[in-house]
Image (cartoon, rainbow, N blue to C red):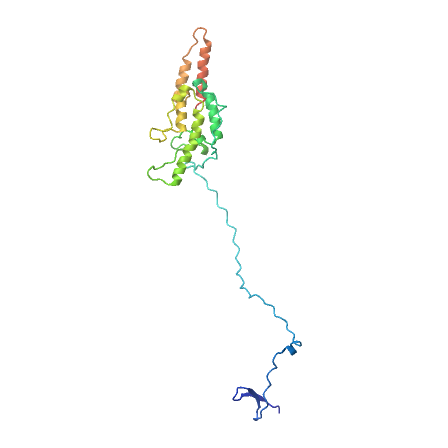
Length: 255
């Protein structure tokens, strides 16, 4: 029968092996201390230092392709307007504009100034306000000065107000830059005695059109009746031709 052992502890805490029948065997000798002598016979393989395992990030579910938003369309009754890109400090060159001194000069003068104003992108500063309910081209809506409460306003509101009048001054410069003495005397100063703006470029063109052009159907009818009533007196055919030419230029240079 094989001998069975179990461990027992004596008073000093040293474990000893005791047989099942009470016999004991001497305690196991302690391990030899590590010395420089047996260091030569020891081989150590350093364990690699591994970084702690990081938790796996949860997989991000794929984002479905969002359907593109439909483009925003402006209603014709409430158009939006962005500021034009013409912000150069120098004013347009007026060398191509003839001098406006009388109604005979209206057509050529109006054609030249209109071309320059169109090129600057500021046509909306001279276009007339359409009748209520009339839908016109989005680029033909008039630009009006922003409302500003002089007693209570923000920096943004003041900047918009200044920007509008700066652009309007460019259009006014084109309109008054080539006026003869008499047409120039019809234009009031931009500011009143208190420094507030009292007329815009649209007002300048309206004054000149009423005086030298045909600004409505009623005025055109008057020009027609006036020229039809003229007759050649004697051999003065040139005066009769000039009257007709003046009437044609007035009608063609206006709307």
